[in-house]
Image (cartoon, rainbow, N blue to C red; front, side, top):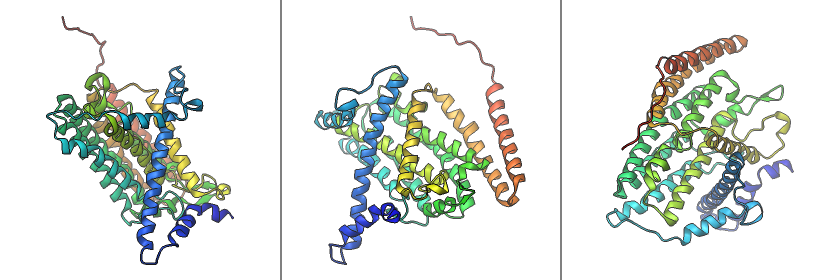
Length: 391
């Protein structure tokens, strides 16, 4: 019974595909999986939007959505209907084809990255030995869609927002990728399924998740910072800084095209949270051995939604950085610390089992954090700001 519940979606797919001739079954199996992903993740997007609006309302002493449906639960549906019915305005001088393709490219590549995520036991759409590389290849393609949107609009604010967005995404994509290299070093594989299996072990009922090691915790924190910047979330939401750039690279977008950018951003959050869950939080494995009877897909999506709650919490807590602060933080702290963590991971690997490597690796990382953070932040002479206004 427990196994049946865990594999309910796999069994349901096989049952549906079984009605077709044998020659069509492989193609039908892929199509059913694609339809499931396209149905599930936009639904999670709607839930995440509702959670964010209610959560930020609570943090800012507001009510939040409370008119459409009980507790405002139907607000995402109302937003979707509004986006579908709004007029699609394209600037006269804009490149209409590229202007149309930019949000489509963003949504397509985000969903393609999801295809390699193991969302449960035997629940991976595409099994790849190099699934991690495929995910990052798709993630890098989002920068192309951002530049397409800014350039095709023929708007200086849009182009400036696109250039800032591309610079930010390239800068933080390097530590995002390097933080995952430590996991690859420990697992010895680029397969996301094998990475989950390597963490699906227990000692005294506690899991062997990589986040519970010194190098894994450091890599996870750097990954979380870089992922926040990659998805243009606060405090790294400078590409769409409303107070400076109107709406950034999608200033000239309206209606359903704007909704596609919105969808791409939130599905990107879900996707990158899913990868972080796979790399550092054991993927679909249970947090305790005695909870192994709970369906594997439940644990995966629970961890992903918990990550979304952290994104919302950070947005309602931290102020936006300046552009120079954002770039300095990437190149002078996040990237060097991530590279240093790779050395610590190698030391952890070759020191063997025992408490000695816990002490040595923890002390080294703490000293590195103190030196890189302390020297980098406190060697500057801060002065009282003076504000001048145009006359």
